[in-house]
Length: 205
Image 1 (cartoon, rainbow, N blue to C red):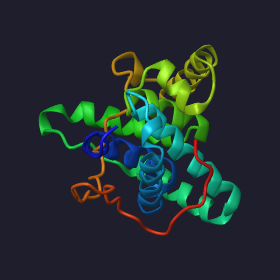
Image 2 (cartoon, rainbow, N blue to C red):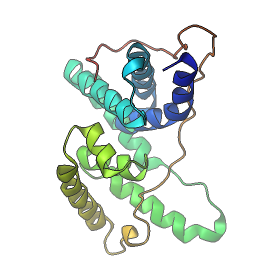
Image 3 (spheres, rainbow, N blue to C red):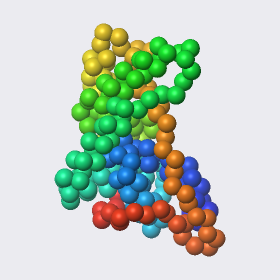
């Protein structure tokens, strides 16, 4: 993979990696996770698969898990921020579809109330648009296991939404506005500059 190809991958995947990390640990820590994810990706550029997104999300997930092991207090604060972001998100649509807005906001509230594992799985499928096979790759399980988990997570979300089940009409919880990606300096013949905050120490995926 050339430096230009890596830049292309970065431009395409960075917003989605940041959105995923933000959904787990909030915006500030999510930026750190995203920065470290692409640092690892650059070091292992020859190993990047095509498509790269599931692999990148898997690296980001491992970094979050490492943070949880290393600093449970920081992780708890970051996870609480992520939950507030999820429950407080709003969908920007016109006044003529107020009913849709109400349903989607109800879905967000229900999603925020689910167990962490359910929220992560549903956002991978609905928000990130991954297939069951790709989501299984991110979560480190078989496709069959993920299918069962996804069925149960959807049932729990439906129960949280009763008596009006939004999933019957819109299986995607909501497409929240994705955070803007950090800028990437395109320096010729050099490793792309990845925005960095405090480096996170974690095992590579």
